[in-house]
Amino acid sequence: MPKKIKYRLCEAVVILSMIITASCVPVKDINYFNDYSELAEPGVNPRTQKLIMPFDKLYIKVISIDPQTSQIFNATEEIRSGGSNGILGYLVDEKGDVNFPFVGNINVASLTIAQASEKIQKAMSDYVSNTSITVKFIDNQITVMGEVQHQGVYPFTQDKLNIYEALGLGGGLTQYGDRKKIVLIRNESGKIMHYRLNLSDSKIANKDYYYILPNDVIIVEPLKAISSTYQNITYTTILSSITTLIAVLLFTNVKF
Image (cartoon, rainbow, N blue to C red; front, side, top):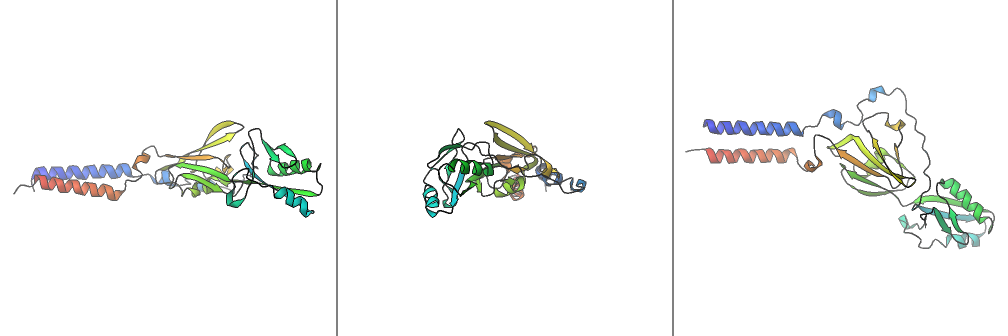
C-alpha cells in the first residue's frame, strides 16, 4: 500500500478517534445522584397546598340532603370552560372570581381549595342550608421542553407533581440533558419567576420547588460540551461516514 494511502488512513483513524472522544459524556454528568452516600437520613419536604390563581379551572359540586337543591346547582355545570375527562368547571377570571349560580361572583384568589369550599358554602348559606361544597382543580397541565425524549404539554390529575414525575411525562432526559441545569418557570403573584434545579443533588427532595405546580414550565438545558443539534447523531452514523471516507480514499488513491 502506497505511503500516501497509509497516511490518509491514519488521518481518518485520528479523525474518528477525535469524534468519538468528543462525543463521550462523563458518567458523572449523566448520573442523577453523585452524592448519594452523603444522605444520612430521609429528607423532609412537606407539601404546601397550591393556592387558587386567576385562570385556574375549578370543579365545584354542591352536596345537599335536598335532591332539588343538588339538581339545581349541579345541573348548572354549563359550558363555562372546557373540562378534562368530561368534567366541566368554573374558570377563575382575572380578578380571581368565580361566577356561581344564584350567588354571583365569589373571590377565591389566593385561597386553598379547602378555604374556597368554606367561602362558597358560607355564601350559599344565605340561599340554602345544610349543604356541603367540594372544590377541586381540573385541567392541570405542565409544559416540558428542551433535552427530553418528548417535548410537549402534559395534563395530570394530582394537585402537584415532583420534578421526577414531571420529567417522566416527557419520557425523561436525553443523553445530552444537563441534570444540573433544569430551569423551572412559574407564575407567582403575576410575576414570571425562574428557578434552577439540580437533579444530581441527592438532597433535592429537601429543596424548594421540588414539587411542580400546575402551569409550570420545565426546560432541560443541554450539556455544555454537546449541542442539542447533535441529538440524532449516533455512533453508527459516525462510523458509517468514516467507513465511506476510507473507501473513497482507497478508491481515489490506489494505482494499478
